[in-house]
Image (cartoon, rainbow over the protein chains, first blue to last red):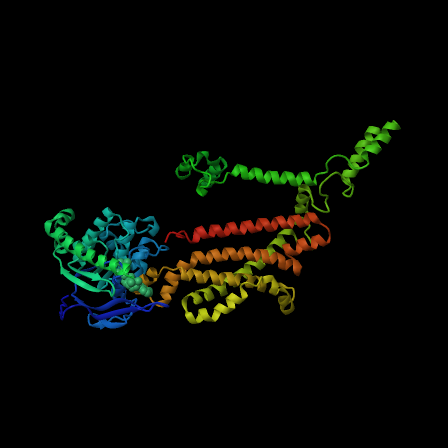
Length: 274
Length: 333
Ligand SMILES: Nc1ncnc2c1ncn2[C@@H]1O[C@H](COP(=O)(O)OP(=O)(O)OP(=O)(O)O)[C@@H](O)[C@H]1O
Ligand SMILES: [Mg+2]
């Protein structure tokens, strides 16, 4: 893969390695020599078969895990733990069900000492942004899965993070809701100009949302191939269905799919061989 | 209020008029083995209670005629006494008035009092009382002990449980203590407690504290352990500090399990208390039934038993109500 060494790059990952020590078992090499830079304002999607270290990489970026080797810096300073400059959106179940929607969204500002009253305009604005205006008084569990993910996005944005990390944020949604939410993610990305790293299992989603795509391979987890993609930039000006049906999109999709199939077959062979 | 009445109505009228979700049960063809198709029919439950009361009444009722009545009546007949009819009535009346007169009844008042006697005892206990204290005073004395002991158990147990779920050092520190003391029935401590604190309030409250403590520790600890890691992670990346994560995420997340532990503790404390009061006390429901037994006042004993049961049910109901009020999000995370 090609490593872009850009001085203005915001996120910089170099020679990252992660080995999980398993009690009474062989250590698992979840990441091996992962290096890349990500300029501010880019949307990176991570794709790859199960167990190739996507979540591990994201958790290191978020600061939940310390890598066994290598360094990660954001804007030049090393990442040592979780921080509000790196927002996280989880697949599901990370909302605080004991709080109302508005209190979930204002959670970050309130942790920094802001009064509820003060954060109210921000909450209302964010709710409108994610298409949930008027839902501030609802309980989280009264919302559908798609609505809950909208709240999770709004909650993340409330802190105005430098970078947004998402681990399969749309993975638990049905196909239709998912497509709508993809549009929302694109919209937020373009309007806020935030750096985004998004993990997905869907090839289509990875191509549609990412302006850069890493296809990762397992055992040890590594970046197999990197793609620069044009679709995210035009995603909002074209209809998503039309874009996804365009020959260029289909061509890329088949290319990535066959790459992943190849890897899956290697994994299967590897497992049969044991 | 109207909702309560509606609910009451729909329950009393059985499943026939239930709304949608229960209505679906009506269309099920497989109900034997489908647990969700088993609903409660209030009328049947009321009937079962009534049957129980009738059996109780029948077992203690003075059926038939007093022993020796037949011979006496025969004698009266033979002498053709003009008072023959009258003496028959008199005989029955005299025997009924005398509690020791033998009747054909399963239980007499020395073994099991009749429902009527129990009602009379309730009346007597709530006005004259038992050993200087009315029934209400005895009940309150018991309740007060339970609440104080429980409160202490919660106040000490919850922080320890939370700490055990948050720190390896504290977990290792408390684990052997908790695991060692937990299996000991609290009543086993009674002899020690009486030596240390006498038979007063302190010994009983301490006993209840011990009964609640382990349950509360384990409840709070498992509450912490059940917190989804992603919620904790989310809180940290939203800028929460450790104390904030504890109070804003872990505590509300553990609240359902803590309240369940409180409910269990309350039940255990209530049971332990009665036993403790039987051992040593001068007031309280346990004392009352034990003392009444010594005086062969079975009616007072039965009143005490019923009040203990009813209070147990009421306390549990209050706790359930509290749970739905305090943690409407339970099980919806
Ligand atoms: N806590 C852990 N202890 C031991 N091994 C782990 C741990 N977490 C992950 N692994 C291993 O590390 C590898 C990468 O895991 P990771 O969760 O990052 O994969 P992933 O790409 O996110 O997979 P998926 O697509 O299924 O979510 C896997 O082989 C997994 O078994
Ligand atoms: Mg994963």
